[in-house]
Each structure stands twice: as structure tokens, then as C-alpha cells.
Amino acid sequence: MSTVRRTAVALAALSALALTACGPTGDDAAGGTGTPSAGATPSASASASAAPSKSATPAAKPAKPSKSAGSPGASAPADPDFDVFPCSTYDVTFTASLAEPTTSSYLLKITNKGPKACRALGHPVVTFGGLDGQATERGKAPGIEDAIRLDPGESAYAGLMGGAVDGTGKTVDSIAMTMNTESDLAQTPLKAATPGLYVSSTKNSVTPWVDNAEDALSL
Image (tube, rainbow, N blue to C red):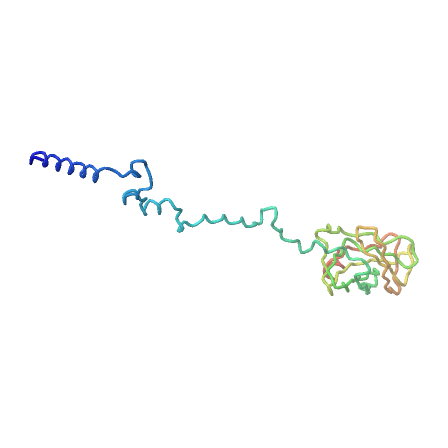
């Protein structure tokens, strides 16, 4: 073989080797299992940004509205007198004492003997011994909202006038009293001795309950 021919063969062989080294492998050309380059790996920062942050704090729950005095659920202040009922003869003790002999005037007194307060309403209902009828009411009584409140042990007073001896009446030795309760409550009358009480047919009268003896005898 000539020198020129051997040189041509050698150059052809070198060219074939160069093409084989630079070209892709069979697996890479077909999209096979070749190892990806470092640039194809997803970045760590991108993964971190995609994941939700654990530092985010959930929104605070709204506070429940508090009950105020104007809200439907609020309790209204209670009336301290809402359960103070009228006094009956079961709630009080009763006495009568002579105040003025010439007019047969007596001071009537009741005292709350119970454990709870009660109200002395209007006028006492007074009858004279075995006589028919009752004492005439004298003076205006306060309304129920202004009636006298009697706490346990407290007293109220009324003035009873039998009348001057005028020959038209009778003498009695006792009276009976019941309370005005503005109801049909049955009561047992309370009695008091009134020796020599002269009951005039036209002058007898009784005042409403008041909170002191002086006013009871001056009305």
C-alpha cells in the first residue's frame, strides 16, 4: 500500500471515532433513561415557596357580645317592694287606748308581728261591740303605692272618735277591727276593750292609717 493511501485510511478512522464520541447515546436520543443534568433539578427555593408557611397565624375568633342592661337577655333591677302585700289581721297585733274622754277618742295601733314586711292600706274597718254598722271613714287615705310599709316590729296608727254624749248613741265596751286588703280575703276580726266608749249615731269616725300617733289624733 502506498504511503498516500495509508494516510487516507488513518484519517477516515479518526473521523469515525470523533463522530462516535460527540453524538448522543441511543437512550438519550430516544428520550430514555439517561441521567438528567444538574440544571434540570427543581430548585430548593421554588419548593419552599410552593409549600404553605407554618408561621401564618389563623385569624382570631370574634369576641361574643356582652349582655348589656338594654339587651333582651339582661336582667332588670328588681323592685324591692314587688312582694310587699297588704297587711291583714293575721299579720298584726292590735290595741286601742283612750285618748280623749269627752269625745270618746281612741288611739288605734297595729304592729307587724310577722317575719316579712306588709302594707297598711286605707282605713281600718271598725265595728262597735254588738252595734250594727261600722265607723265612718274620716280623711283621705293614700293610694296603694303610697300606703304605709310596715317592716317586722313597726307600727301604724289611726284615730277613732266615738262622739260626744248627745243622747243619740249608745255605750259599748269593745270594738272589733279588720284590715283593708283590697281583696276578698277572709279575716278574723281583732278585738280591743273600750270601757265606756260612747258611740254617737252621727259623730263616730275613724282616720286612715298613718305612721305616727300625733297625726292619727289630729286628722
